[in-house]
Image (cartoon, rainbow, N blue to C red; front, side, top):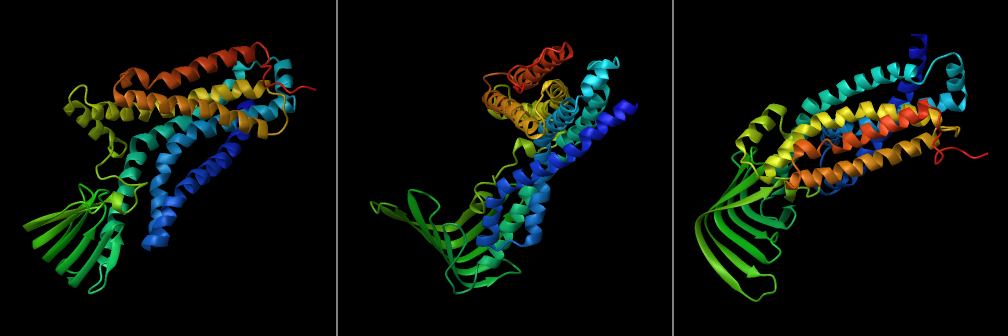
Length: 375
């Protein structure tokens, strides 16, 4: 137990540090799109913090395998560099006897990742889109001003004579819709009403008694349409294209809802394949934590390089290979070319084969020449 506690205490500080760094990098990668909301949309700091918080479960799902590999490899690299592994083997302790604390640690991380994947990630993805929708609704209310040309959404110019924010009714409306790449629609109506549709994540503006002037972008043709009622929809993509979509994606659905939708979808439907892939990934990605930990033991015990930079580099390289395989399998399974029941486990099978091969080689003290440092 003393040995197990010693190895565990070597692993968890690096695990926590690497996890924080990984989260910072992933959040920073999304900040460009979020900053656009702050600068151009006037989104408040608390809404931005809410976005980051809702993104965390999805980030953690992919971060845990990489961070586990990095932490275990760095711990055993330190033990190897200080010849502590040699001392343990001289005392009759094999590499296999050093695995229980790693397996126990990986099991704890697996449970955490499984809980995040099954419950927290779908909730976070739904809450993130709902927050974007609330921002879109506020933009519709706050961005439209009376007797002033304003552009509350990209390529949508509004001019209204009067606007009741309480009833969300517009009087004497003039709208120029340039979202279509081929035509420009100019809408003139006596009245318009803003109605939010949270289920579809769109904002609909219903116009009464008006005219639509449709002009081709190249000015080659034009036509006029008279209407009694007309609906103009504004989706989340009009708020932020990089982060939003109109319909609930499979990664936003709970496990129960996914199973229900899979049963209802016809066989051969690409959406059914996507939902099946998403359901199986909720188990396969957390399961990879186990194999990443074993790979970290094998590599860390055989690498002779001092310092943790080598361990971090090797960890990132291995995770990159796993992530590329995962993305390829995702694409193939989503298209229906390979059944998700089979394809989604291929990255894990790659890790299993790598873990068994590397561990047996390390236990037999056969060094990995491509990783060994030369004198």
